[in-house]
Length: 302
Image (cartoon, rainbow, N blue to C red):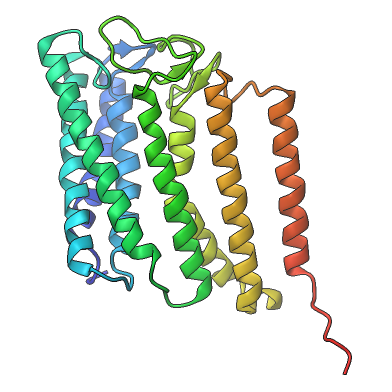
């Protein structure tokens, strides 16, 4: 870890320390906003940035071109993330919405500043991702796990922009310049902790699912490597590569499915028959492809 991006490690450690602080405030401060404790949102962002920045600190230690440029992109991520969390905490302390809020001149100025930090995060993420994607890593398995994770993660980060573009079926509250929900107004019934709508579509779902491909796909590759000690079939790099490609394809499919579900104004927890059918198709294809990848290969007759 001595070669990892130190500012990103510092950000990750800071967010990890702040998470239990916000958790305590959830129970100490009885105020709520949109039916959730006021400090839930800072806690969620702290957890997310802790994972996100730790992963990027590792990714930027991998072999890639333009190391100096990517180092500055990582530093830009750190500055933007600290600024965004600081603004979210400030608004939480005031009992105000942080995102989309233009109710007062101060709220509007804070939202503009957050828009700048979000833009910096998206741009730095994209530039750094391109530099890491184009290079091969230690082996083909890790190379493709990183590439697929970065592509899906970048799409997940970008999907957050839909919250401010005004997609069909979206209702913006007065004095607000965006919304999370589709088909219903923000602030209705939601899932515990995350607050995702249980009665309509919620664009935070694909944003979350896509963004965290950055952690899950490389972790899947590491899991396969660990299991190869016990299972002989996984000792073949070709088999592990196929499984990673299948996992990446399925994960990308699920991201698109929950994005489509949200855009149709459908809650994650109340899928219709079409969504369930498409999910079933994905499951059948994934299990079939995985079984084929793990099946013994017959040697051609001499």
